[in-house]
Length: 461
Image (cartoon, rainbow, N blue to C red; front, side, top):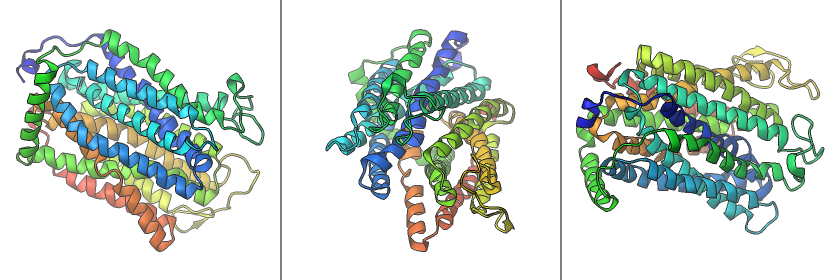
């Protein structure tokens, strides 16, 4: 704590740029592998059926989440005791590279393809999440408190930009339609990749690994690390001891505890919204992978703009105000999505249904759904960026990394809940709309709890 009070000099431009590029480097792991490219390929081409594939993908995600939930606070406590964060980031970067690269070998029809893909995906996810915990913990050493929101928002915006560029490159040059052998732009796949074996989809793994390797290097070259405080062996012992004390006393930090619970709930809802948004659109409109990819590009563009603007609003209005506003936007967008069918919008207004061959997003209902997607993208970036800034505002200054570990724990330990409840309600009522309605409860409850969180007066700016 003393170090943060006497600190008079902060990082310069190259150091901050190196830190910001971490989000740019890591985002393809989530955009290409978790959401838009490899995950649909896994469910449709590797698993026995899409339903089976979705279940298996959920198991892999849950296994990775369990490891993250158990180890994040422990590793955060160790890092606080040891001081340095870069060695940990480097170690988990190796997991990212190995996990992503291994996805290339998940060839359809191979006996080992499904378990290989699940294990590799889990490894890459664990690496990305843990590396993010230690990178986030570097923030207070880079800029003064009044600029934390701008730094966080810029990082998230750059992450969205990285996701956008990588998704566009994969769709234009690598992923091909097996029937035509051409990519979204009408090109033959790069490097002679075989469309029938879905080489372009599998290439999203090594592509993400190479992308990460290139763009994470500035963090190691230009961003300063905290000074070493204790040897690793001693840091492990003291870190775990401090963690036990933190967990034992977390209820005494009632304000932080309340915020972590609120974040856990609305983050679960956001996970479910992104997980099922494309599936819901496919059920309503029959969207293809190309249309889902285009939808993803639009969300990424608006997300990057939203995160960039949200960072400025964070510094001006405070992170709590930004998060509350973002949750209001998600609730509004969720209601808009629930009000949409193929031939109606806003629950009761009839519109002409989609007609095959009319073009991309030609029907009014599709356009309205896209508008709701734009709103989701615009507020999701500020929500996530301001959430980590708010944690810094409300956490004890001498245990930032520990609470970032608990923050990761709160964001992962129940991440199965929203998707599971959506699936249960959908199956019981045989209605996609009823299943998606569950997510609104997560956003409403998260907002109610967050309203009771207090930001210490001296740390609002």
